[in-house]
Image (cartoon, rainbow, N blue to C red; front, side):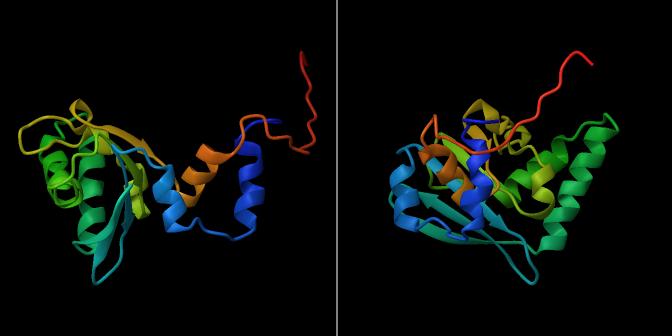
Length: 167
C-alpha cells in the first residue's frame, strides 16, 4: 500500500486528534450528510452533520434496534422476504433522520450491529429502496472520512514492503 491514502491513516489516528466540527462541515458537499449512530441504553441517538448544521435525534434503545437488525439479517440469510423488517428498520433509523432533509448522499457511521446492515436496502414508506433516491456510503468515523478526503493523493510513506511472487 505504499503511496496510498490508507497507509498513513493508522499513524494519523494514533495521534488521537478527532476532526473539528467546523473542518468536517467545510469538507462536506451541499448535498451530503453524515449520519452517525450511537446505540446505547436507555436511549440511542443519531447525530446529523451537514454543511450548515448539526443536530441529534433520539432513537429507540440499543436492544430494540439490534433485535430488528438480527431479524432482518435472519430473513436475508434464510432467503425469505425481508421487506417487513426492512420497512421497520427504515422507520426507526432513517425516517426520523430524513424527514426534513434533502441530502442525496448519506454517509453512515454505524455503531454496534448496524455495521452489518445495508442501509441502502431498507424500504421507505412509499415502498422504494433507499438506494433508489439516495447514495449511501459508509465510514468507520467522521475523522477517518476527513482523513481519506483531505490526505494528498501521493503522500510519501515509509512502510517497508516484502513481496514474494511465483512461489
